[in-house]
Amino acid sequence: MGVAKIVQLVGVVIALIFGLIGEFEYSDVIIAILGIAAGIFIVKEDRVPFLIATIALIAASVQESLSSIPTAGEYINGAMGGL
Image 1 (tube, rainbow, N blue to C red):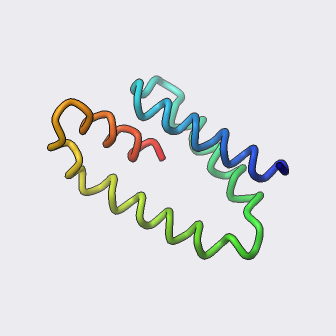
Image 2: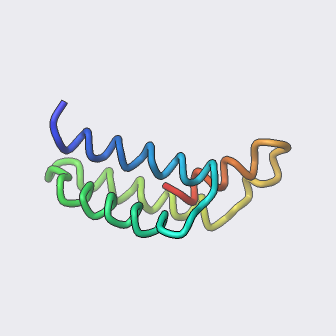
């Protein structure tokens, strides 16, 4: 496993944790820094799938339609927003 995969996995895990437990003062800054670091390490053949996944995650987090799921909906929306 290369440095690129490790940086991307750490970024996803931290974004999910922040999304599930809630934000604190510097959580947006940390996620932005990890996003920039992950973007630097994306190899050329993974750029298009990465951009498509990014657009899909943005569309899902904007909708906030998952909050209608009882009990878990708000946590899922938080995780999607964090990603």
